[in-house]
Image (tube, rainbow, N blue to C red; front, side, top):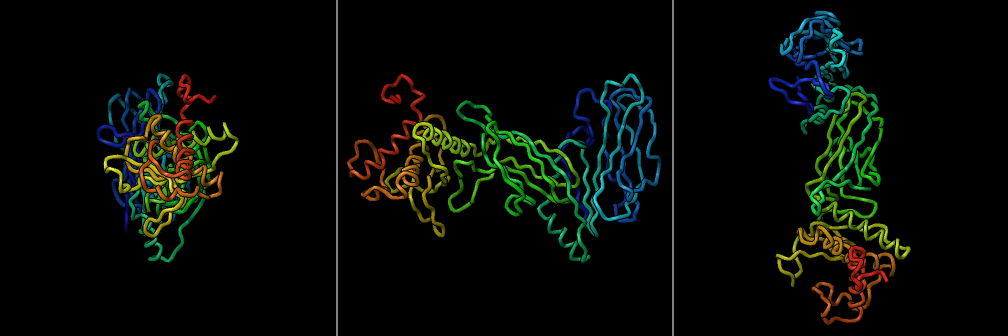
Amino acid sequence: MRIFKLFILSLLVVNGLYATIMLPKPLYRAYLKLVQGKPHIGEEFTLRLSIKALADAPRTKVEWHFGNEYINLLSKNLIDTVSLRGGDSINYDYNLRIDKIGAYAFAVEISSLDTIHKDLWHGVAHYYIAVYYDTIFYADTILGDFPYNIEIPDSLIEVMMDSLENWGGTLPRWTATVRMHGTVRYRDNDINSDVRVPRIKMVLMKGFVWLGELVADWYTDENGNYDKTFQLTAPNIYTLFVQSETPDAKAFGFILPPVWIFDPVDQFCVFFGHTRNFNPTITSSNEIVEMLLNVRLVKEWTLDNFGITRGFVNIVYPKPGFGRDVSAFIPKTYWLPFEWAGPIAYTDCIYKYSAYNKMWGLGGLMDISHEWGHAFYHGVLFDHILPSGVLDFIEESHYLSKVTNPGFAWHEGFAEFFEYASVMDNFPYNLALKKS
């Protein structure tokens, strides 16, 4: 018999994991715990209900809710009335039996029959048990109908499949309606504040981030919000996360990974329909979000001023190593029409070294805008044709007074225009940068 305790994201209170209604002025705290036996099919087990009253409650109603005919309460009544004093903690043991394979939800509602408590919120303790052949999964949660998150060992799916092979059976399946909504933000180091991220990709996988099956992906709206509802197969593990892609650009690693996944992620198990409120704030690798948003800015500026723009660019970040004439202490950004990296060929990409210089503020915007200008020239205006002579100096650093050739000067001058034009609205009184 393999038994896994799935710990639920919950409020930790002294001496236990308590079921507190997440609203002001609670009257009760309660939780359920397996204390004797195992919920094999047809075998008796014991759940202990622990209740703590936060005020005197002489007439407290304890009512069980199963919602399934295959759960049998063998001791006590479905509804009891007890007397509790403020600050007291009392335990009640209930013997139960499950008669059929499946997933089951137990709920105990604790409420007051005293009119003096009409303005206080009552309590609910929840417990979940899923029984599959020789494998049992069970979980307790204080959150009830609120969003909850079950942390599951990586070996869980493998164990489930072993169980199926041993029994030669088929797991019972059903669908559950799950709504997911929230807001994506990132830490903007320029202002040291959390800012909403418009039009960034969210991904829902069945399973885990890299070892799962794609269910759906979508972009947040212009305010960083999302609200989606899915019919999901249960019981299953799902993972919801934000990745480094917008409609304007995608950032990925040098060789690996194929896309960056931002923390935090929301990993959860679906037994029944529920609503999840996932509001990630990206504080690690947030410079990647800054680069993606800078591409969005220069792309929009180009469309507004010229009526044409580039649809999408790829960003390789971080790009290890430096050019032969660049100090290891100086970050470098560049664009190349083609580059080999071992077994992988990169084409038409912006390359950014791992460094915080020229990542944030106007410097970061100008840096990305310069390389985006190259990509715009190459991929949109001149159909992937480079000016004659560009490759003669492509691996060398360049600056205004450097003597090169007309083709290279034209190529870099075009990108320099975008570098400064993208920020000129920030300098309205600098005649050298005004639109006129």
